Amino acid sequence: MKRTSGLVYSSETGRACPKCGWPLKNCQCSKQTSVPSGDGIVRISRETKGRKGKGVSIISGVPLAPEQLVALGKELKKKCGAGGTVRDGVIEIQGDHRDALVQALEQRGWKVRKAGG
Image (tube, rainbow, N blue to C red; front, side):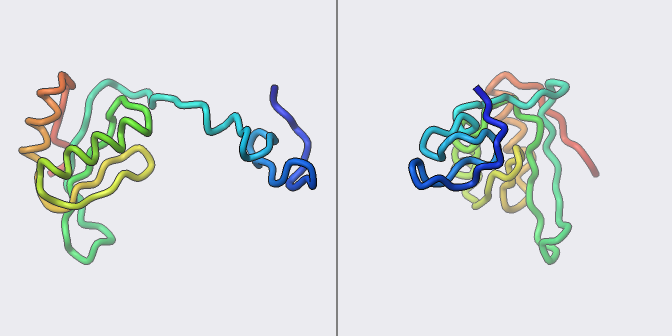
């Protein structure tokens, strides 16, 4: 049941979720998980833009839910011995580890391509 009222706060239930209108402790939005749709190809590229010349390996197109994506990111960071993060459905690993990442992701059964130069 989606509520469409503009209620932001109630003295009975506290803060309300801006998306679904339910109280934050019963929010229906957080319970919904969706896997991003794509063409089925995991792409690995290298990017330096906005990082003062330091490169990162970018992994995009992984068909996993957000929680599983965070776990995969942690595993890949450990394998490469580097730091990184998961943002907006994209895994970023510090440094140029494209070859190791391609091998690790192909072992999981995904079709992997190097993107960019």
